[in-house]
Amino acid sequence: MATIAEARGALARTLHRLGEYVLPPVCLSCREPIARHDALCAACWRGIDFIRAPLCDRLGLPMPYDTGGPMLSAAAMASPPAYDRARAVARYDGVIRQLLHQFKYGDRHDARRLFGRWLEQASAPLRADLDLIVPVPLHRWRLLSRRYNQAAILSGELARLTGVRHDPTLLVRRRRTPSQVGLTHDQRRRNVAGAFALRTRPSRPVDDLRILLVDDVITTGATVEACARVLRAAGAARVDVVALAMVTDAVLVGT
Image (tube, rainbow, N blue to C red; front, side, top):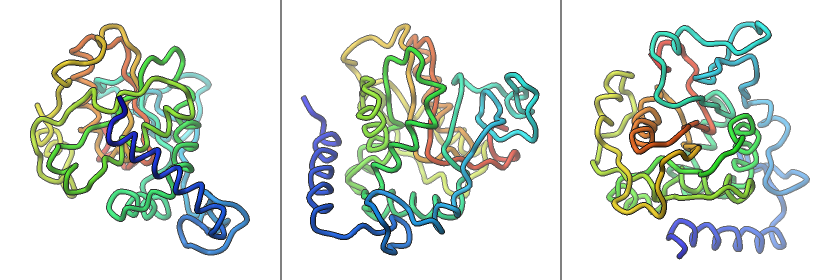
Protein backbone atom coordinates (compact mmCIF):
# COMPACT_ATOMS: atom_id res chain seq x y z
CA MET A 1 0.00 0.00 0.00
CA ALA A 2 1.45 3.36 -1.01
CA THR A 3 2.28 5.83 1.73
CA ILE A 4 1.12 9.44 1.65
CA ALA A 5 4.67 10.51 0.80
CA GLU A 6 4.81 8.07 -2.13
CA ALA A 7 1.41 9.22 -3.40
CA ARG A 8 2.49 12.85 -3.19
CA GLY A 9 5.68 11.95 -5.04
CA ALA A 10 3.81 10.24 -7.86
CA LEU A 11 1.47 13.22 -8.22
CA ALA A 12 4.38 15.67 -8.18
CA ARG A 13 6.20 13.71 -10.89
CA THR A 14 3.07 13.65 -13.06
CA LEU A 15 2.51 17.40 -12.70
CA HIS A 16 6.20 17.99 -13.34
CA ARG A 17 6.09 16.04 -16.61
CA LEU A 18 3.01 17.96 -17.71
CA GLY A 19 4.75 21.24 -16.89
CA GLU A 20 7.69 20.31 -19.10
CA TYR A 21 5.40 20.35 -22.13
CA VAL A 22 4.04 23.81 -21.31
CA LEU A 23 6.70 25.82 -19.49
CA PRO A 24 10.14 26.76 -20.84
CA PRO A 25 13.11 25.37 -18.86
CA VAL A 26 14.63 27.69 -16.25
CA CYS A 27 17.48 27.35 -13.78
CA LEU A 28 16.25 25.70 -10.58
CA SER A 29 18.10 28.29 -8.52
CA CYS A 30 18.02 31.71 -10.20
CA ARG A 31 15.13 31.00 -12.66
CA GLU A 32 17.11 32.23 -15.67
CA PRO A 33 16.26 30.51 -19.00
CA ILE A 34 18.38 27.43 -19.76
CA ALA A 35 18.45 24.67 -22.38
CA ARG A 36 16.76 21.85 -20.44
CA HIS A 37 14.56 21.14 -17.45
CA ASP A 38 15.76 19.89 -14.04
CA ALA A 39 19.11 21.64 -14.24
CA LEU A 40 21.10 24.70 -13.18
CA CYS A 41 22.61 27.47 -15.24
CA ALA A 42 26.40 27.55 -15.54
CA ALA A 43 26.75 30.37 -13.00
CA CYS A 44 24.72 28.59 -10.32
CA TRP A 45 26.50 25.30 -11.01
CA ARG A 46 29.81 27.04 -10.32
CA GLY A 47 28.31 28.27 -7.04
CA ILE A 48 28.12 24.73 -5.64
CA ASP A 49 31.16 23.41 -3.76
CA PHE A 50 30.90 19.70 -4.55
CA ILE A 51 32.64 17.37 -2.09
CA ARG A 52 35.22 15.22 -3.85
CA ALA A 53 38.02 12.86 -2.85
CA PRO A 54 40.18 12.71 -0.85
CA LEU A 55 37.71 12.12 1.98
CA CYS A 56 37.59 10.77 5.51
CA ASP A 57 36.36 7.22 4.95
CA ARG A 58 33.96 7.34 7.93
CA LEU A 59 32.61 10.90 8.09
CA GLY A 60 32.95 11.89 4.43
CA LEU A 61 34.82 15.07 5.35
CA PRO A 62 37.23 16.51 2.75
CA MET A 63 40.86 15.73 3.56
CA PRO A 64 43.83 17.96 2.63
CA TYR A 65 45.73 15.32 0.67
CA ASP A 66 45.45 11.75 -0.61
CA THR A 67 47.54 9.04 1.07
CA GLY A 68 46.57 6.43 -1.51
CA GLY A 69 44.31 4.42 0.81
CA PRO A 70 41.41 4.75 3.23
CA MET A 71 41.86 7.77 5.51
CA LEU A 72 40.31 8.78 8.82
CA SER A 73 39.93 12.35 10.01
CA ALA A 74 40.90 13.35 13.54
CA ALA A 75 37.19 13.72 14.32
CA ALA A 76 36.43 10.15 13.21
CA MET A 77 39.29 8.74 15.26
CA ALA A 78 38.38 10.75 18.36
CA SER A 79 34.69 9.86 18.24
CA PRO A 80 33.84 7.00 15.83
CA PRO A 81 30.22 7.28 14.65
CA ALA A 82 27.55 4.61 15.08
CA TYR A 83 27.15 4.48 11.29
CA ASP A 84 29.76 2.97 8.99
CA ARG A 85 30.27 5.71 6.40
CA ALA A 86 28.74 9.03 5.44
CA ARG A 87 28.85 10.85 2.14
CA ALA A 88 27.37 14.16 0.98
CA VAL A 89 27.00 15.88 -2.37
CA ALA A 90 28.31 19.34 -1.46
CA ARG A 91 29.30 21.72 1.30
CA TYR A 92 26.32 23.42 2.91
CA ASP A 93 26.73 26.93 1.59
CA GLY A 94 25.99 29.11 -1.43
CA VAL A 95 23.62 27.81 -4.06
CA ILE A 96 22.92 24.42 -2.50
CA ARG A 97 22.00 26.04 0.80
CA GLN A 98 19.50 28.26 -1.03
CA LEU A 99 18.09 25.31 -2.99
CA LEU A 100 17.67 23.23 0.15
CA HIS A 101 16.00 26.05 2.05
CA GLN A 102 13.47 26.47 -0.78
CA PHE A 103 12.96 22.71 -0.94
CA LYS A 104 12.54 22.29 2.82
CA TYR A 105 10.47 25.34 3.72
CA GLY A 106 9.14 26.76 0.46
CA ASP A 107 7.37 23.78 -1.16
CA ARG A 108 9.88 23.97 -4.03
CA HIS A 109 10.02 20.34 -5.08
CA ASP A 110 10.95 20.98 -8.70
CA ALA A 111 14.59 20.18 -7.86
CA ARG A 112 13.84 16.68 -6.58
CA ARG A 113 14.97 14.94 -9.76
CA LEU A 114 18.27 16.81 -9.81
CA PHE A 115 18.72 16.05 -6.10
CA GLY A 116 18.00 12.39 -6.78
CA ARG A 117 20.68 12.19 -9.46
CA TRP A 118 23.20 13.86 -7.17
CA LEU A 119 22.38 11.46 -4.34
CA GLU A 120 22.70 8.52 -6.72
CA GLN A 121 26.24 9.60 -7.59
CA ALA A 122 27.27 10.44 -4.02
CA SER A 123 25.94 7.15 -2.63
CA ALA A 124 27.54 4.92 -5.28
CA PRO A 125 30.40 3.81 -2.96
CA LEU A 126 27.83 2.91 -0.28
CA ARG A 127 25.41 0.82 -2.31
CA ALA A 128 27.27 -2.49 -2.61
CA ASP A 129 24.81 -5.23 -1.57
CA LEU A 130 22.42 -2.58 -0.22
CA ASP A 131 19.10 -3.94 1.10
CA LEU A 132 17.10 -0.90 2.14
CA ILE A 133 16.88 2.89 1.87
CA VAL A 134 15.39 4.75 4.85
CA PRO A 135 14.87 8.49 5.48
CA VAL A 136 15.41 10.39 8.71
CA PRO A 137 11.84 10.84 10.04
CA LEU A 138 9.94 13.93 11.12
CA HIS A 139 7.75 14.02 14.20
CA ARG A 140 4.09 13.64 13.25
CA TRP A 141 3.18 17.17 14.39
CA ARG A 142 5.98 18.72 12.36
CA LEU A 143 4.94 16.56 9.42
CA LEU A 144 1.38 17.89 9.72
CA SER A 145 2.55 21.50 9.73
CA ARG A 146 5.09 21.08 6.92
CA ARG A 147 2.94 18.54 4.99
CA TYR A 148 5.94 16.54 3.80
CA ASN A 149 9.20 15.04 5.02
CA GLN A 150 11.96 16.38 2.79
CA ALA A 151 14.23 13.43 3.65
CA ALA A 152 11.51 10.98 2.55
CA ILE A 153 11.18 12.78 -0.78
CA LEU A 154 14.94 12.48 -1.29
CA SER A 155 15.07 8.82 -0.23
CA GLY A 156 12.15 8.05 -2.53
CA GLU A 157 13.92 9.61 -5.50
CA LEU A 158 17.09 7.67 -4.71
CA ALA A 159 15.16 4.41 -4.38
CA ARG A 160 13.39 5.07 -7.69
CA LEU A 161 16.69 5.63 -9.49
CA THR A 162 18.53 2.68 -7.94
CA GLY A 163 15.75 0.12 -7.61
CA VAL A 164 16.63 -0.50 -3.95
CA ARG A 165 13.74 -1.21 -1.59
CA HIS A 166 12.44 1.88 0.20
CA ASP A 167 10.80 2.00 3.63
CA PRO A 168 9.89 5.64 4.41
CA THR A 169 8.24 4.79 7.74
CA LEU A 170 10.68 2.29 9.27
CA LEU A 171 12.01 4.92 11.67
CA VAL A 172 9.70 7.13 13.70
CA ARG A 173 10.42 10.26 15.68
CA ARG A 174 8.59 9.48 18.90
CA ARG A 175 9.46 12.69 20.70
CA ARG A 176 9.02 16.19 19.34
CA THR A 177 12.35 17.98 19.69
CA PRO A 178 13.10 21.71 19.56
CA SER A 179 14.67 23.06 16.38
CA GLN A 180 18.33 22.12 16.00
CA VAL A 181 19.23 25.44 14.34
CA GLY A 182 21.99 27.23 16.23
CA LEU A 183 22.75 24.36 18.64
CA THR A 184 26.23 22.99 19.25
CA HIS A 185 27.05 19.33 18.64
CA ASP A 186 26.62 18.40 22.30
CA GLN A 187 23.33 20.29 22.50
CA ARG A 188 22.08 18.57 19.34
CA ARG A 189 23.13 15.17 20.66
CA ARG A 190 21.20 15.71 23.91
CA ASN A 191 18.26 17.13 21.95
CA VAL A 192 17.79 13.97 19.87
CA ALA A 193 18.75 11.40 22.53
CA GLY A 194 15.95 8.83 22.65
CA ALA A 195 13.93 10.69 20.02
CA PHE A 196 13.95 7.90 17.41
CA ALA A 197 12.66 4.33 17.33
CA LEU A 198 11.57 1.63 14.91
CA ARG A 199 7.88 1.68 14.10
CA THR A 200 5.86 -0.77 16.17
CA ARG A 201 5.50 -3.44 13.49
CA PRO A 202 8.14 -3.27 10.75
CA SER A 203 7.16 -4.99 7.51
CA ARG A 204 10.20 -7.23 7.88
CA PRO A 205 12.98 -7.67 10.46
CA VAL A 206 15.96 -5.32 10.31
CA ASP A 207 18.37 -8.07 11.39
CA ASP A 208 21.41 -8.32 9.11
CA LEU A 209 20.12 -5.71 6.64
CA ARG A 210 22.48 -3.26 4.96
CA ILE A 211 20.73 0.09 5.26
CA LEU A 212 21.31 3.50 3.69
CA LEU A 213 20.00 6.39 5.77
CA VAL A 214 19.07 9.57 3.85
CA ASP A 215 18.86 13.15 5.13
CA ASP A 216 18.97 16.58 3.54
CA VAL A 217 21.83 18.10 5.58
CA ILE A 218 24.43 16.70 7.96
CA THR A 219 25.29 19.55 10.32
CA THR A 220 26.95 18.00 13.37
CA GLY A 221 25.95 14.41 12.65
CA ALA A 222 23.90 14.12 15.85
CA THR A 223 20.61 13.27 14.10
CA VAL A 224 21.96 10.57 11.78
CA GLU A 225 24.03 9.23 14.68
CA ALA A 226 20.89 8.81 16.80
CA CYS A 227 19.05 7.10 13.92
CA ALA A 228 22.00 4.80 13.22
CA ARG A 229 22.11 3.71 16.87
CA VAL A 230 18.46 2.63 16.67
CA LEU A 231 19.07 0.64 13.48
CA ARG A 232 22.21 -0.96 14.92
CA ALA A 233 20.40 -1.91 18.12
CA ALA A 234 17.71 -3.58 15.97
CA GLY A 235 20.37 -5.75 14.33
CA ALA A 236 21.27 -3.93 11.10
CA ALA A 237 24.48 -5.32 9.63
CA ARG A 238 25.56 -2.00 8.15
CA VAL A 239 24.28 1.55 8.31
CA ASP A 240 25.63 4.16 5.90
CA VAL A 241 24.46 7.75 5.46
CA VAL A 242 24.05 10.01 2.44
CA ALA A 243 22.93 13.64 2.40
CA LEU A 244 22.68 16.44 -0.11
CA ALA A 245 24.87 18.74 1.94
CA MET A 246 27.28 18.69 4.84
CA VAL A 247 28.71 21.30 7.17
CA THR A 248 32.41 20.56 6.85
CA ASP A 249 33.72 22.68 9.72
CA ALA A 250 35.86 20.24 11.70
CA VAL A 251 34.78 21.91 14.93
CA LEU A 252 31.15 21.08 14.25
CA VAL A 253 31.11 17.71 12.55
CA GLY A 254 31.66 14.56 14.53
CA THR A 255 33.33 16.20 17.51
